[in-house]
Structures are given as structure tokens and as C-alpha cells.
Amino acid sequence: MYQVIVIMLVFAITGFTIIFLKDVYFKLLGFDQNTPVWIKTFIYLLLVFPSYQLLILGYGALFGQFDFFWSKEKKMMKRIADIFRKKSEK
Figure: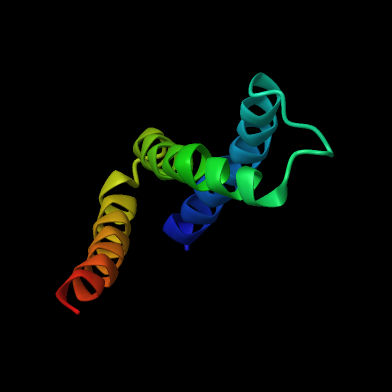
């Protein structure tokens, strides 16, 4: 039960950190209400998504759950790579 609570805590802390970082990234890039959504989405995928992956590993390591999160990251990256691999084979 303790491990489940710690894992949920890592997800929560990472989520709150990403909300803060997204705002910082967007402000540094000068985004406002008039910035097209497609540009915000592209930058989100380019900067925020990888930041989340690194942060979850970092927080996971701080809370002693690095192996758990590393195994999940490897599975996710394999799935993403498989999507691109299938597209390039067609």
C-alpha cells in the first residue's frame, strides 16, 4: 500500500510541476491568447511532454521508485517507436 501511495504522489507532484513549467515555457516564448492552438500544441509536444518524462523519472528516483517509472517509460517509448516504425514500412 505504501508503494501505491508514493507512486500516486510522484504522479501528482510531476503534474503540478508540469503545469507550472508549461506556463513558464509559454511566457518565455511570448505566447498569449492570440497564439494559434496548433503552435501551442506543437511546442507542448516538443518541450512539455519530454519535460514530463524526465521529471517523472527524477521524482521517481527521489522517492525510491525509479525502477517502476523507468520500466513504464521504456514501454511507452517502445510503443511510440513501433508507431513510427509501422508508418515507415508502408
